Length: 289
Ligand SMILES: [Zn+2]
Image (cartoon, rainbow, N blue to C red; front, side, top):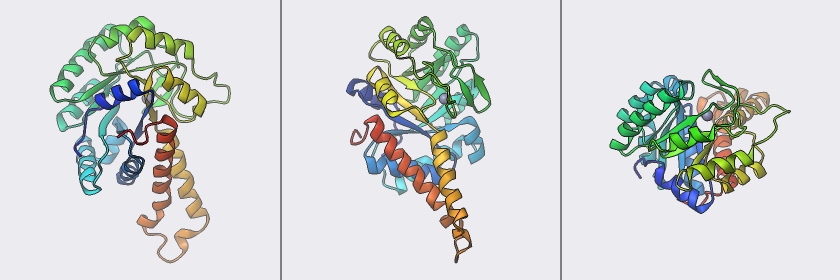
């Protein structure tokens, strides 16, 4: 199957009351791991690159070619969107140009009027090529690619204004943060989520950033109230690191040819697939391809 825009499967998720995972990749192994998890679960997913991860992987064209070619060679049958996560304006345009089927333009650090103006331009460029667009109002707490936010609740009027630009799904702060949740985290603000969902209407899927470490009951409640895309990044990093650490601490790299990178990276890669499948089950998108 070719890469698809995320619009149709996120609208289907919004109507169907389930969520779709946006899983960040960093390399060949992770990309294969996410695709394998999606296929085995028969779930649509977004494979996401941050600007930093794409640079690490060799650029947006490399990411596009990698995902497209793996979909082919792995005989992937489920809908896959290749999505830019937290993209700046120029990066979003570049991704649309090379063939990403979805982009997030994150203008949350700009004055609101500039964010809206640039969002409209990204929407026009993306939709001309059949790609979907996510935008953000307010800022989401924690740190992502060096962008630090304060963890605010998105302004309802700004959400409505942003929804009117023609974007396909909306990221908005509801008490969620990026990275690891602190012990004193107060949880998601469901009243605020309800108010945003009501204000933007049922045709605008909402995106929950910082999906790693939010408890199951809160994730599922958020989905029931209008969240249709949940971003998972930190948790993949944690399970990959833990499985790799275990392999080395058990001395397996010192047994036979255990130092072969194909062996060394295998447990971590499997751990990412297992996590992707587990989160797809949480979100309820298994067998929704
Ligand atoms: Zn994010």
